[in-house]
Length: 293
Length: 334
Image (cartoon, rainbow over all chains, first blue to last red; front, top):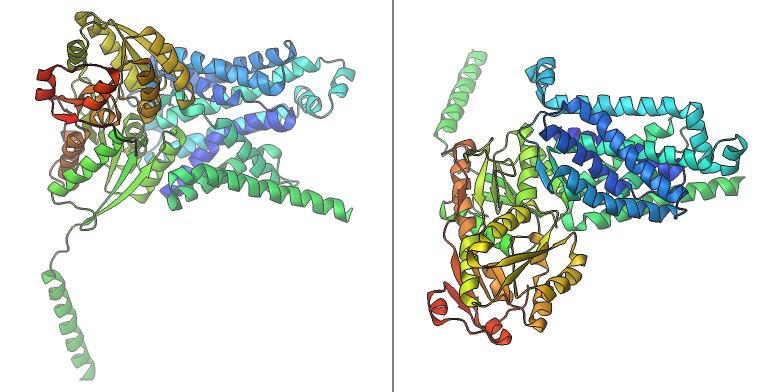
């Protein structure tokens, strides 16, 4: 039972990260490597604030804002500096390593003795003792759901529509008399804000900030997005955002099962093979449709 | 009539079975432990070996009454978390964390599962918030610390190289144990007329360049308990030897590989000490929260005469005589 609870908890936290990667990768068609830097940025900001006694619930919007700022920087480098999308992300990711170290103060900041969104007096009063071990799961589910719903709401707005337009057809955006560069920057800001939010929650769940916790975050995000969108491609009733979050949970489930049966050293190869299988399956479906048409 | 007999027979049978149950010899207690080691290198491996030795000396032996689930995180934080979660969901009797990131990750996973955690090779348990400032455990977690004997190391370097002025230290910016060790070095270096030059790296790939920069600026180098640097020690030694710069180690394995000398901790002894603490918790004699963390105060001198010859350095007689172990050749990394 614990096994499944952990998978769902981890899957939902990384689901928020996957939502961010979904925006940049699928909607904006912008391979954004800033993620590896903005995930720990959210965590660094959180660690810095919590160790200074700030209310842990305030860390959520502040981490989002920090990530958004990082996204804006990437956007400016890309749009104003005319640097390729991949390279802009790499530049920010590298810069953020130092920035994160400075913000957190040191490379390892433990939060065991501090109040977090999962462990504080308010929560202790809210949940009876019997539910104690499920309180983390419930808080995470609420946060993930809230984020997804707000994002869905936003995507239906005019601004959200422009975001989707700029990824598919840049000329349409210009035809609507909007600056496509600004729209891209906005998209990057929202996406990295979500990634940083995910980092904030992860840091409080793990109760420690480690500078290297972002390494490989973009891979996990991409895997979740691809698994989610490929598997649920044909289910029209399922929104893309939902399928991405479910994809994240599935990805975490696979790695957890792999961890039980294989050595940790083999994990990365297994992840790569899994990724490849999912991609091949989704490619095959595409082909089949064309043949029948 | 028949029913009564059947009832009597059944009743007698049940009674016999119940009595038989109570007179069964109580089976020996079986223990399952999960060991999470953060990275692969000699010092941490020594810790693990020593730990299992320590348990054996207390009567808990693998194959007899102990099952060990050993997983190595290969220095990846994500893998660390996953290993901890899998141990917690397997409900092992005890979790062992070798090195700070593993210890912290296990502590986090154990908090909800109520499994005791024993750690070793954690340089600063107080900074890692695994123990409070008086050294008392913050929960069902305790263990041993491999705090570096900085003073003894500086003294030893001064004795061996009377004219050296600058010591170079390479460290990984993501390892908190290295940061606290460097602060100590910088505080004490002045007492021995030394200046410290540092070079920070983020990954193994940065090591050759960082080594090159350091080698040009310093008279000698010394190592910390930095996992990334120690894993790449042969590379650093090759470059340093070519430039004639002696490298001092922090542990016996490093001297075997070709470091000139080390005032080091015996990680096998550290492991044994940890094993004995773990045995107490497993057998239920003490709870982890009742045991304060322990350190090894004694540093022992290890020297490598082959390395000295290559560098053209004469090791003073009294040092070789008082050394705990003298290595006469440079071994290949395993």
